[in-house]
Structures are given as C-alpha cells and as structure tokens.
Amino acid sequence: MKVHIPNPLQSYTKNIKAVESFGSTIEEVLNNLEIQFPGIKFRMINEQDEIRKHIRIFINQNLIDTLDVPVLDNDEIHIITALSGG
Image (cartoon, rainbow, N blue to C red; front, side, top):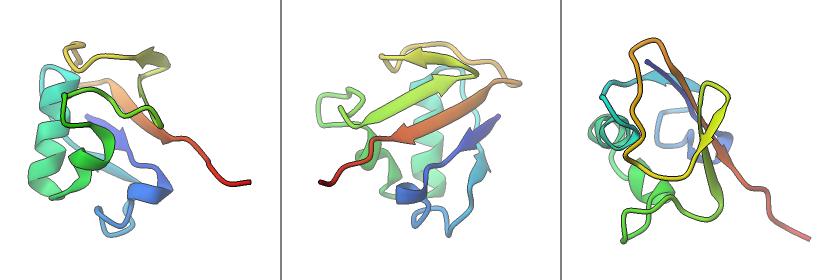
C-alpha cells in the first residue's frame, strides 16, 4: 500500500514523498516502515505505543487514533505533521 510521508519525515526516506509498505494493521505498516527507514517510527509513535500528539494518520480519508486499525492492500495512508512556530 502507498504511504504518504510528510516533509519533516522525508529525511528518513531520502526525500521520497510516497513509499510502499505492507501489513494488516497500521502498527504492522509502521513496523515495516521502520525496517525500511530506521528511526522513522519513533518520530510518529511514543514509548507507550501511542500516536504522538503532533501526528495525524489517515487511512484513505479516515482519521485513526490507535495502531490496531486494520488496513487493506489498496488503502492509502497519509501521515500528517502539525505545524508549529509563532
């Protein structure tokens, strides 16, 4: 499935905006991303295995809030990071 990577995390993917991953849940997809791009998962998931507060993950157009959400091979995943500054 296609995973869209936000600009702040593209340094892990060598500036690739969309990568392929697989899994039956979001957690498995992110674990696969971590194998391909070491360090990327920690930027999205905290030590309690929760999605970090500044990260939003969408399956197709549905916002998810836990890692156990199932995914299908033809789903698209969008990872969004919050903007900060003042």
